Image (cartoon, rainbow, N blue to C red; front, top):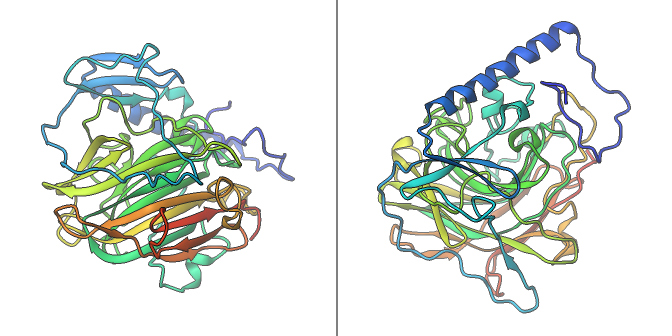
Length: 404
């Protein structure tokens, strides 16, 4: 692969006109790529690596001393619904090494990506941000045309509830969506949010499943985390960004870690669920994945009008990023399974048993979100938040894209 070039998914049809860059543009792209790779060289050089292992799928892990002495919450995660009519398999995580070994006691895993696998074309800020350009959170009751414009970089099918909360939990049905270009992504996630969204005051903690070739080096779904302290306007150490690409995240688990590969549901076949819980506990936003407390974001990262002591929005749903600058045609990137919600169980992607934490003690209440979609021709959402089934509050989401 040529360095600094946007890669086309090998399953994609040839575009009618492939974009061509002049020598000056190619030189600038190479300089930006060098800056991104140097950023990671410097980060890796600062690590105190005690051991190194490689996962069965080839992901290299550095084992570094655990910095945190914080105790996780004494709270359970979301409970499987036990619905015999809709059997689900819990998400599995590969062991940290080929033989199932973990690092020495007192260490935690941090991913080390091969630098030659980083092929992004934008700036370092673009690379650390959530997508080609930083997204903006728009409340679901904002009917402004900007969010729903066909030319929007970020496109959604999600549901948000405006309620004072201290976390959320639920299950995300994981798939391997088709993503057309390497700098586009498709994800299903949760958000906990506080701030108006004007200026730089909005703050989030985000967790979910994401397929993003430029970030992970492959076309498979990965566990991701993300945070912003400034409405996505700037990324970097203690400001915001993905996984462990920036400082802020405190890893505590030896078994589950950001960027881990996820099992994929099959159309009409086996279905995999990713159980997630986020909770504010003793001054930290803890993240539970399956039966493991993976780690936390210190609430000290956030300010008093943001997530320092509470959240004001819980959001669940899907998002894709569309490279409209280089590829103005309608993106063929899927959301979820690539099928619309009306296909239902085992064919459309779902999220279920969604709940909000209403107090600091861990009390949970059913999620009652307001659905919102950027473009119903490409992606859709259907929801039942009545809580009258074994799935509690749930939604189906996704679609094939390809239409504006």
